[in-house]
Length: 93
Length: 95
Length: 96
Image 1: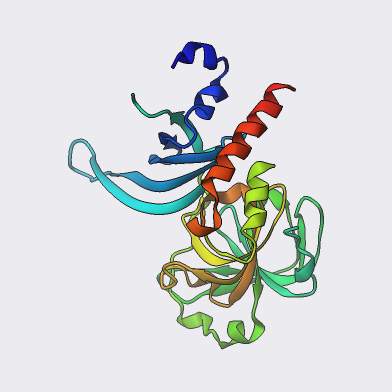
Image 2 (image 1 turned 180 degrees about the vertical axis):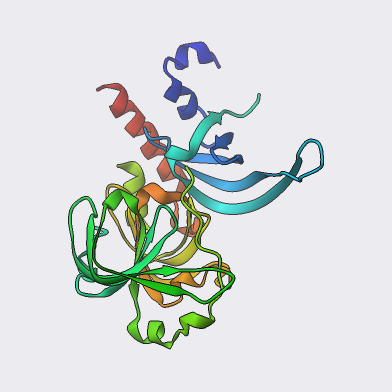
């Protein structure tokens, strides 16, 4: 597929990712992967078969550096409000 | 429409962006979901002691400060012994 | 407008709304407006022991701007229809 012709503005990239698995980075150290079914101009999204990853950074006094805890959970069908979206990345080919 | 019409003259609980919880009778609201409460009280939650109620009287809350408005079931609310409840205050909204 | 329509089709179905203060509320979707403000009936707060604040609340109005996620019933969502509608909306926006 000649994507250079099809992609003229940022939202074209998201349109071409419809019904494909995408990676979404959100505010609050959250990331999602899921199959994209809908979006709008606010970057509100509807995804299915979603896995969420939350990075929890624990600051321990007296220790150098910080500890990362990773929490994961799965959701079948999810609406994501666009104001939390930092980036949407198409599937790697 | 997700209107507030049904809540007028009812006892409601407001949760605000900063985590505060306020109960009162909804006297009125407008298009921007600004809300006027009468006979309102703030409910202060803590882990050390029971819920403290601070009277606020007639209170105007700006719509953009509101997280949630809940209709209180009067019987269920009166059945709760606030002095026995220990809980962290609700966290503030983080964007 | 598209997402608003999706929520309208889910009226009377069970959803879980997760707020930006980490509160999760399950209930029956009663109505939604163009700001995606949501009204839920028969609500239940997840982890009620930690969040007793809403114990006596039976139904509520949630401001759209404080929503992080809404978990939808998969059976209520026609994904093919959604994708087609999204493509159509994209075209109509491009023409503006």
